[in-house]
Image 1 (tube, rainbow, N blue to C red):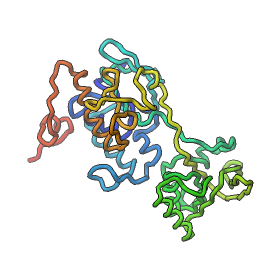
Image 2: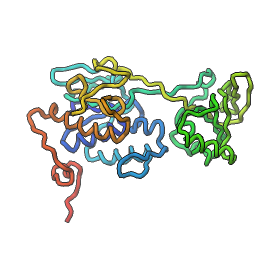
Image 3: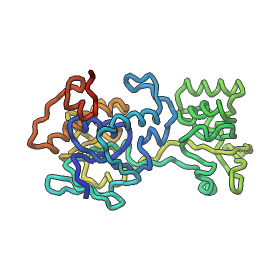
Image 4: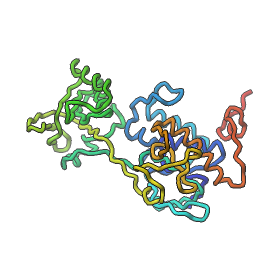
Length: 340
C-alpha cells in the first residue's frame, strides 16, 4: 500500500502543474495515468501542433510544454504510475483507498482528478480490413510527423485536426485530403488555406468522398473512395490518417458517487472540491459557471485545489500563503541555490 498526501489522477499538463503546486506547499503527490506516457491529450493528439495561449510563451508544442512541466516538478521526485487505470475509490475512515487495474493500492486523504475528459479513443474507419493495418499504415494520431516524410499520405476528416495536418504534412509529403462533404467544419481560415494549397498544387482535395476499400498485403498499397451516388476513385497511398474526433468515456469515474453533469464533474470554485470531501476535479473534467476549457484555466484550478488539499493532509497545521519570490522555504523545496 502506498501512502501519500495527494493522489493525482491524470498526467497531462494540468495534473503536472498541480503536482508543482502541491510540492511548493510541502505536500507529497503520486500520479496515476492510464496512458503509456505523460502529457495527456497534448502528447497523445497533438505533440507537434503549436499552442499559442500559454502565458509568457509565444508558442510551444504539447511535447515541449510537457517536458518543461516535468523539469519544473523534478525537485519533488514524484512517482508517476503509467499504464494504470483507477478502478475503485472507497472511503477508509479519513482517507480514500484507491485501487488500480494492476491492483496497486493508494491510501490518501486527497484525490485530484485531472483526467481531462476521461478516457478517450478515436473514432475509427468502419471497414473490417482497417483493423488489420492499424498502426501499420492506418493511424488516428501523429506522434512524429517526420515518419510521414516523402510518403503518399491520405487524410480523412473535415475538422481542425484533418485540415491542420493536411497543411502541415503537405510541406514534407504528398497529401490527399478526403472529406465526405464539400464543406469543411474546421476553422474557416484554415479551410481557405487548404484550398489555396490545392490551387498551388501543394495538396490534393477529394470531396465528397468516403473510404470504400483498402488494397495491400503486408502494407497498404492503395485505397478506393466512393461518393453517395456510387462514383469511385482509386488513390495510391502509403499511409491513411483518420481524424473523425474522439469517443469520450468516463470509465469507472461514474461509479465513484460524484454528481456528474453531462460527463463533467461540478465543483465549487473556492478549492475545486466535488460533492465528496477530499476529492477535487480540475481541467476539462470539471465544470462550474463561466468555465473555460483552457490549459491556463486548469493551472489556476490546480493551484486552488492544492491549497484545499493542505487542510486535509495537514489538519493540525495552518496554511500560510507565501510568494515564491520571497519565500525561503519554497525556494528550498525547489532546490534554488542562494546567490552570492
